[in-house]
Amino acid sequence: MENKYENLFSEIEKKILVLIIQAKIMDDLTDIRNKYLSKKGEFSALMNKIREADDKKAFGEAYNFARRKIETALSEKLAEFQKAALNEKLHAESIDITLPGKNYNVGVMNPFYKVKREIEDIFVGMGYTVENGPEVDTDKYVFELLNIPKDHPARDMQDTLYIDDNLLLRSHTSSVQAHVMEHANGKPIKIICPGKTFRRDDDDMTHSHQFAQVEGLVIDKNINLGNLKATLELFAKKMFSKDSKIRFRSSYFPFTEPSVEVDVSCFNCKGKGCSVCKGSGWIEILGAGMVHPNVLKMSGYDPEVYSGYAFGIGIERVAMLRYGIDDIRRFYQSDVRFIEEFNKKDED
Ligand code: DAH
Image (cartoon, rainbow, N blue to C red; front, side, top):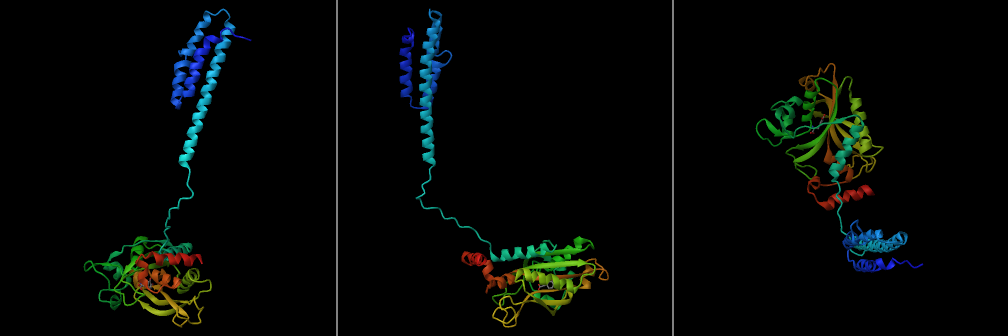
């Protein structure tokens, strides 16, 4: 049915539809909406004419019909713009899978640190806590409290760099024993201390003026040599091989009595004799012993009540044995080819 008001809206409707078609960006649509369809917009204003219309219903229908057409055109155009914007974004973010990739180098851990962490893990698993001590220390802690008085011949084997007469780079981590005992105030102790040590000692490929040790110290009532042996055997089994055995050879350290040199059965030949163990079936891995009564006394422990054991493990030495490294200096040279070899070995 004809609506006599249709023509009233058709001109402006056409004009707006053309503007919508010509819109270039989303803002153009907003402008059109504001200019024509807002409350005081040109198109909306036509509604006021309803007052003069004799058939108000027909007028309203014609108005609404035109308005819907415009609204539909606006939302269709808006959808078009949104789709175009999305496509543009997707295109900009698309990945060209034919481009060559970037090559990232993944860092690997120096075998020294791997072994250090393993040693720490093993002892922490046995209830030890990890302590630290100063690398530059006084004569008192490095020597005197360890039963090595001035002019003691044992000092010759541990010549080091002196900052002055009293201050020196520690020649062993045993210096930490006295520090820990001082702080423990006569209470039981169960610690390890990994750290750098310095010594005039670079005669061959297996020695360096700087190397690292892990010191161990246990003090309590009723501690005996059997406890030390069980502890070190467990360490050897975890570090080297399930069927590793250890043996004690008597030795001398001023701070332990008795003192022992500890050998582990050769994990390469299982004790038959090979180049790794130089034919003996055993490999020396560390020094240890029962804490000397003088050492206990000097640090405030009554040797009649308390006893203890101590040991010193060379970290590089363990790593060299474990990985078959011939030259200790390789640990410090930061040669990536060397370090990467060990990751390969671990994967095997
Ligand atoms: N301090 C010794 C060294 O540097 C190693 C050592 C031996 C440490 C016996 C100890 C020990 O605690 O009881 O060669």
